[in-house]
Image (cartoon, rainbow, N blue to C red; front, side, top):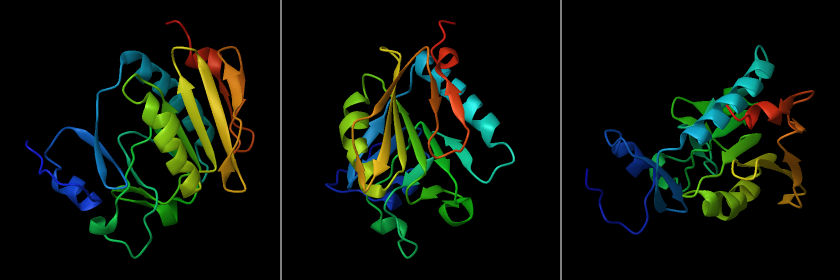
Length: 192
């Protein structure tokens, strides 16, 4: 399907391409196609999802894996034609589901976002999305590096992310926005 050649796109454009199997994100109106993740990416995603989902069972917070649209800066009065930033984080945890989650995804900042690096997304995850998530007020942002077997945890303090906490494959990571929730990285980065 050929896409129209425009300078700026909106969420309305994305919705009009529902028959297109390609996944897209918007960064301030700029379109970015997403490539399919690798099997290592998906194994890490599955383990993170499994551990956090098990903790969240019967709790008010919920976890959503990609593809799931997150409209970071959308206000209640906005319509799809006025939304210029839409991302699809690998994992999003939302604690105010009644207010933030609708049939299309999440509007506003999730409490926790996890991005798993891949060669095609590394620059965006570490620079562009880092800035977007900070600006939107995402309370906790994890960058998972499969090659180095590291997790960088950024916590929002006074509207800013500072030096991250760094965790290795032998560590257990506390999830700051979820009381008493921990992720065992030895399972996340297992060799299997």
